[in-house]
Length: 315
Image (cartoon, rainbow, N blue to C red; front, side, top):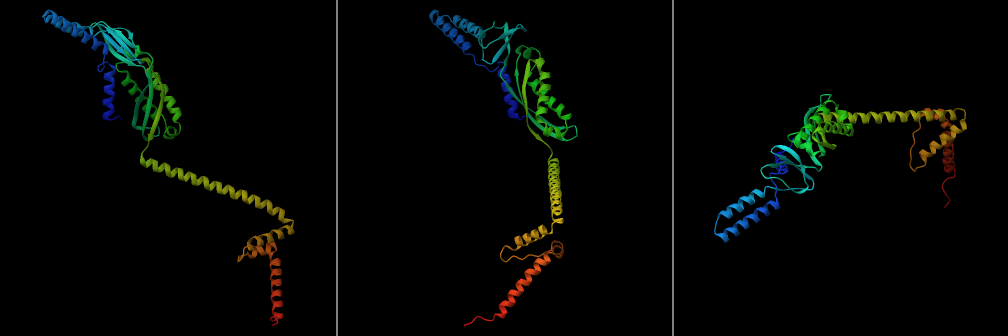
């Protein structure tokens, strides 16, 4: 909900729009002109009656000139009846017969609105904060068809937001912001068009959900990511098993290739200095590593015995 400062600022803007806080240089000039003239005639004739006349005429005529800014249109009433729009710039009215009821601002206006503790279709309380961009396209309707068009647009936006939230689930609210903004814009525009107001866009700034629900959604997302990781790992294992199966077919009818692969495995494991490799007995039997390793052991033993028979080197 808007704070006190925002409410006071809105009220000051509304008073200024209605002409209650406006400075009219032409009216001040006319008043000073007749006041100076009355003082001059009074000084010349020594009769204060002319000063009274000057002040009276100055006050009366100073009510006639009005000024509307470039983006404003003034709604003029004659004895309570609508006569037309005036402005921008300087225009004149008949004092005490015609009045300016309101100045319509035709610029784009931004209005912030919110829906607090509103239940979604799946009964989740949410707080939604949004901004409405709108403008008056028909000043006559804005002045005659609704009492306070700015307040009416604000309430229409808030009720429309609550209506859409009540028909939308939480997941749709979090993922489909663009669709909800377009739907909300169309709904507010439909309600405000009879007032001469058109909505340009609606933007949702923030969606706040309860802290407990945020924790639950975080755990759910974490579990979903872990599930995806496990599935990917299982798929990788299946692909590796299929590749091993194809490789086994190639080695099944080609013992030479199998022995070469076994030698390559031993080489890869022993090429580093000081490496120690443990070979399972099943691998020794299935891949023929026993013969290779035995031959390597016999050769190593014969080399050792030959060194021992040679004796110590001659001095």
